[in-house]
Image (cartoon, rainbow, N blue to C red; front, side):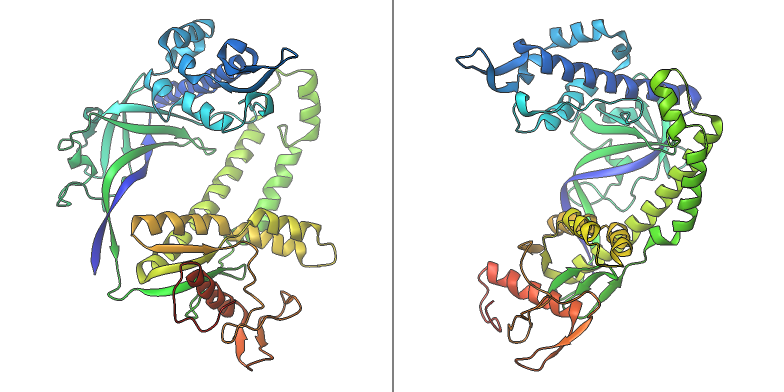
Amino acid sequence: MVKYYQIPCYTMKCRLYPNKTQAKAIDDIIYASGVFYNCLQYDIMHNPELWDGKVNKNGMYVNCYPRFDVVRKADYIHNLIAEHPICECLPNSSITTKQGTIDDLKKSFGKNSIEFNKPRYYNKKYPRKSYTMQINWSAIKEHENHNNAIVNLTNVGKVKFRGWNQKIRFGDNKDFDFIEWRNKTNQRAVSITVSKDNCNDYWICFMLQNAWKPINECDILTDVGVDAGVTDMAILSDGTKYENPRFGYKYDEKRKMLDYKLSKAWGWSNIEFREAYKKDNSITCSNNYNRLKLQSAKLDRKIMRKRHLYQHEMTTDIIKKHGFIAIESLSVKDMIETKKNDETNKRAAVRRSNLSDAAMSQMLTMMKYKADWYNRNIQPIGQYEASTKVCSCCGYVLPNKLDTSVREWTCIKCGSHHDRDVNAAKVILIKAKQLIDVNDLPFVI
């Protein structure tokens, strides 16, 4: 049964195909956006006129926060651009829009005051890779090929793009696709993000409102608990297991060979190059290093795409079959650090690699936002709640921690035989229901 759900804010990513001149223009805008960001941050950190705070008895500023109302004024922006002419190629909307450069800086400051904030600047090693702006819907044109379309970017020109999701529908009756909707909508502008990845490919993201997304929903939605693992990426309380394909491990030998070649080539991976760069920052990487770096980036992207596709299919399959989903709040970073510091475990390095390859946090994030899309009830339990060593039949808790090599165990109290991961998923479901006061539970933990 296909059912449509309305998504208030949907981001659609498409591939851009600029020519050499247009690619150079996009590169200049991205670079200028990084320069503007750095200059603005430096000015805020060193100019007390842009601070909103108090002066204590010693004449020191305390609890200071940036005055973004002053930064957003046209006069200030004009003077800053005049001091740094490279920023003149920036579209105005890339600075003033809600997702623009100023708001990126506002997010980086967060809730911390200036005196407790450590600035982070873009540089050659960590350059800025995108910029956000607003365009009119009229800037999007049809192409003779229905799979392609044209977008007129400010200071760049008309660029072909493709890869937009044709399943996404618009309008109250879901009658229009993305290209057809541009003539029907009452909105004047749409926010876009133009980016460049490590493989030197260009992308455009459209931030769309009130889109309709279909899903093949089951007639009866059940409750389920989900336990994230390493050998199996997700284990459900009904016994279903989604294995971990370990995409990164499959290309491990190729990755090691590329890393070895990069360490010998004249570039950032070579320690001799880094030492020489400290003495003369005008030296550049060799063409061989750039070629190997591109191969490495394409390999990373290939692994990432395979992992993302598998996780999207897995999470969508879980979401479409279940109405109430219980998950476990995990700190993958702490799990990796625990294995890193565990010198007694001979398999710690392997498990640390498998934890990174499983991308647990990304999978849980997908489930959370898809649950919002499709009106599912998702309930996380505490990060440190015991689930593996708790019997899902009687609630008995094992006195000792189960070793990772133990995949099955039998309850001493009731004699029930459990699969380690399936039992943990059942306990997660029970604890999640206790949090929302659901009655008729088999036991209370």
